[in-house]
Length: 238
Image (tube, rainbow, N blue to C red; front, side, top):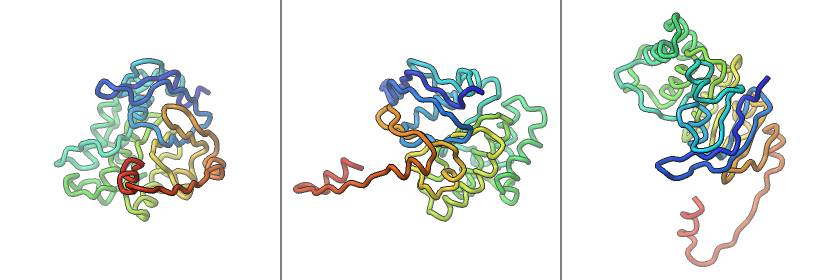
């Protein structure tokens, strides 16, 4: 079986400047985490941003082609959602645009998988952030795509909400091949517990790859003593 994601010498530009440059990586498992990469890599892997150089392949096919063929779907982080629409409408239209004849049924199934039945017909304008982020995942599932790319759906959420959303999403995605892209993923996160592989990316290079628990065991802590403008140093580090 082809690699879930294969990136070969890729440069991805955002506003004319490289956000990813010279990156190569290949997953070896069907459920993976990509940690630390620029958001542009998620966009390239989802088929919505073409690389300026190199290739991004998903399940052996150029990402943009896989998206057009309905084999790939993405769930971006906090993409604009029509405020008057409901999660059901959004997921249904996602399935229709993917060419699915049974769009309503696929949307209903995706919403049920994500435990959203009770909120499926409420306007997104009044929906809490967790519902809006779950809606993006439901829309990706409703396409029927075999591969789903997800952009850090728990970013900035309180710990309890983050764990709940990650647990529900991981179960909903169980029969799909998936990658979650995130700036960081705690080892106790349901995404980490359900991932077979993690790839840590820094400065457009892979710095670690393997099972999440193995990578976590390699982490080290460093102490730094700063003299002088400590607040300015802290801002620069952040």
